[in-house]
Image (cartoon, rainbow, N blue to C red; front, side):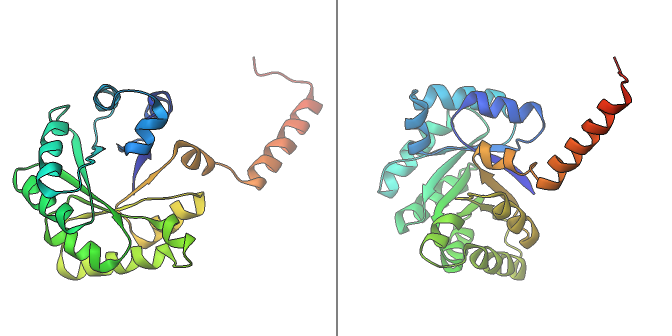
Length: 217
């Protein structure tokens, strides 16, 4: 499974990138706002750092506006993925931009039916929002599994990009189901390394080593 980092914090992206943990980046207007920087400036810096897809989101609500914004965002770098919402106008924009050879990430997906429409419209990525589904007592992973089955049934090339990931367990479940990509905040990716038995074992090893009175350096 590919790891995308869901942030516009270039320092956090750089740290994970140096560890080989970044296959791409997703941003949105809220993340850009948190960064406090100009959208084109910060997006260009991220694109220069990361070889993989970098999602930059349009803000227009009509298809014509999304297409125009998408074309403008695509000028930032060759690895830009234009991000559009899963609305009827968003699907129109997806079809046009995809036909032009641009990568498109259709976001705010909450059902398998929506994902099917996005694939038919030529989406490069579909972004089902796991955490937000969980918030309304719908198992987000069930939706991921339904999309995976439908895409496999018909050979759709659209990649499932599990989004709104909030926990390390979400990452594991998405990988088990077969999501192509998971995008998560840096803190969630870093939390995957943690296990109480690892900490306990390391503590025991260090106490035993201290008793030997030896040094490696």
